[in-house]
Length: 95
Image (cartoon, rainbow, N blue to C red; front, side, top):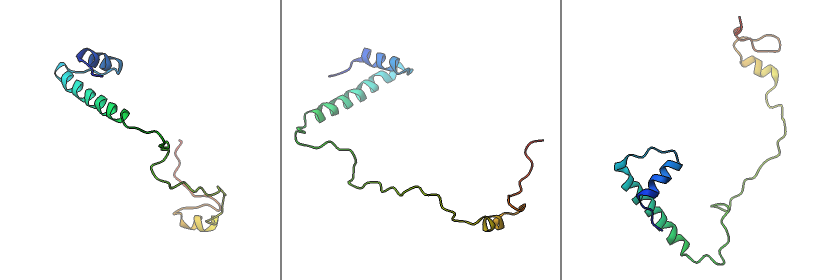
């Protein structure tokens, strides 16, 4: 299947692209190259080939999402520049 200049103009219109007249021929060649490549792929015999879901056989190994108290409050507050008994002090934002 080959596309002509009118097809390129229609595709550009449907894609809401403003295609300059001098670029129509370049775009036509590019689209035809892609279509040739797709035809070559369609010609390959894929009977007996399993569909590819992932590029590798590696799978994600998810850990259970468990809340942990990794850093005690006292140690976290000790890292802050200005703290109140249980909170970090920050500059007032609302006037």
